Image 1 (cartoon, one colour):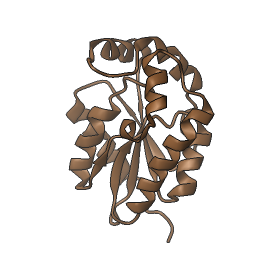
Image 2 (cartoon, helix red, strand yellow; image 1 turned 180 degrees about the horizontal axis):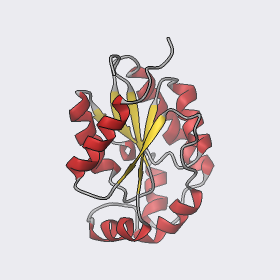
Image 3 (cartoon, rainbow, N blue to C red; image 1 turned 120 degrees about the vertical axis):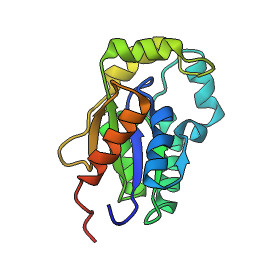
Length: 172
């Protein structure tokens, strides 16, 4: 990639977005932003209490991430954002047309095991099923790649960087 891109690391909770995002950003030489930091306090309170967010709840969060991505256009950056639905990704692309997605995918049992081991995160394992139910994988017309989460974080970030390099340059 000759022009730095803004990359959205997406996937259900527990796929490692917060772990892989900074590693990928370091490999690409661009800043990283944690998508959870863009959530309004009300969203975090809902998720902490085990209540899934509605599409309406997610709009201010998606808009804040989209604004960050737009400010990074041409400069590059990596941001973690579940971006589970096509409509969410469309909203991010509307705000920052050049974004590309790295969809972290994996076996549900592996993801649930990883979620159960993490400490201090507001997203309970109980919401994993709602995440998988909401997930709409990347479509062929969406700029992005899928990367399996099996392996070490360094291996996953390496596979993501390699896959991104293989993407065609965006049209001017």
